[in-house]
Length: 309
Ligand SMILES: NC(=O)C1=CN([C@@H]2O[C@H](COP(=O)(O)OP(=O)(O)OC[C@H]3O[C@@H](n4cnc5c(N)ncnc54)[C@H](OP(=O)(O)O)[C@@H]3O)[C@@H](O)[C@H]2O)C=CC1
Ligand SMILES: O=C(CO)COP(=O)(O)O
Image (cartoon, rainbow, N blue to C red; front, side, top):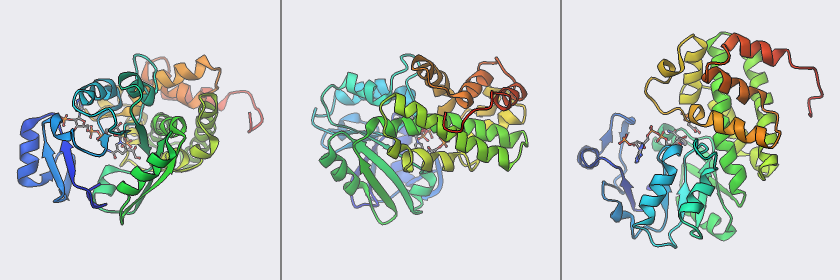
């Protein structure tokens, strides 16, 4: 947002961290080597966001409900909220836009997703993502306001499709990481990306997402990025699972959104009879029902069928 010429208030929950960031203009914990843009003003006071034109919510998916409620207490009802987390609420199996809508009914809501490591964006490396809002004019306005010389934001009205792409690709990236960690080869990884995309598309269709959205940045684009590199925490988590670590050890204390979302994703798929064998395998590995070898065996021995089924 700052690179696009906006004045930005950056809220964080810890006053000490906010003061440190304001003083040093660096954040060695999350963005080592990046100098905070001069137009960004760190604060620990939510009320400082009251006058902003839009709020980007970039805390973990499972905090969406509490953060939206906290923001509602300080924001005018007309301030657009842009959800940037990628996941599904674990307890309720609700999509994040439904969580925010329930907490802040009738307020403008958008979802931002797509292939974009925070580190790349902060360093000003070329990045393209998708912003969805049911109000097409607002989608265009927010996308234009946040786009800059190094970040290009496309817009759509398909909120559901964009949020499904972000939530599901994290689960599939764990599978890709596990295949890499177990040394199963690049061919297996490519097969997982393609068949993972097929199940993501089936899921999106069953839940009202548009196929074209999933073929874009927020679906295929983010799936390819997250399945390609250990720069992704989901992929790196899978990699360590594949090397034999337990889920707890493999997380290394970092946020792994796919691990938090896998069970809800699979439950939603079952509820609408969507076949998602790769996501199911990830969920079974995480809950201890299957070893990785059992998962590979099960995936390879499914009945032979048409590629389009
Ligand atoms: N990092 C990336 O490249 C990308 C991340 N995303 C998505 O953004 C979301 C956040 O990810 P990311 O920033 O990487 O996660 P991190 O774990 O790096 O940071 C999470 C931040 O959220 C804060 N936080 C955690 N819990 C709460 C809470 N209950 N209330 C308020 N603040 C809280 C943490 O504060 P504290 O420091 O005090 O612990 C921390 O600053 C995820 O859904 C992720 O999928 C999307 C695209 C790219
Ligand atoms: O969503 C992301 C990139 O688009 C970040 O992925 P990870 O959460 O796996 O690091």
